[in-house]
Image (cartoon, rainbow, N blue to C red; front, side, top):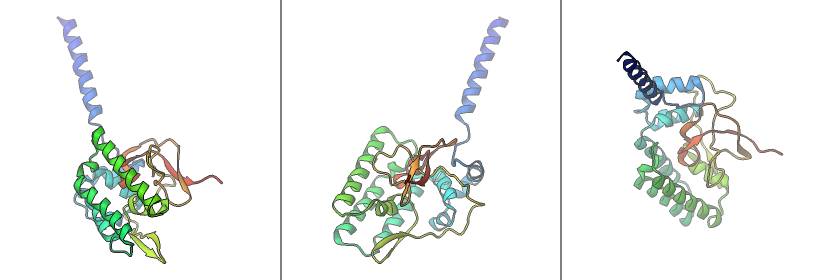
Length: 229
């Protein structure tokens, strides 16, 4: 009898341990300090508006995006694309951006953390088709695509060149020298990093679920760095 009680106790202890692991704190950032900030401020972040989000340093933006609800994520990109459409475009370019906007609004499931395989496949196929048309039909370069779908910051045009507009005023406490800022598993194109940069295969101790890649819906598990000469 006593032996059975011991076995039952061990089993219960194992169950408690497993449950504890399953309830382990979510990873919002590869940086411990930023991850702690996101954990402590999760409630406030889930009511954060776009202006407050854009005012954060980039590493804090990525952490906040991991906390965001699917509706917040979708709305962030919706407003960006609506503003982008106000710039000067050809008819075909305008229609192409508008097509992406419509897809985003109709597919809020794209912005769930627990997307099923069917949803992920649909997302990747539509992104690939959009990318292919932009590069081959509109003759856009990868930097233009990146400015539209690879970072939530607003864009502007200068002599026909699309530029990112930063409104960051240091809403964080400093940026680490290295942050997990790109995805190594991008299946469409390297739109992870800016011009003359690529995603380096270095170990991110705390990869996040989202915050990188297309519409920031890929995992952050690599570092942006300069392309080798």
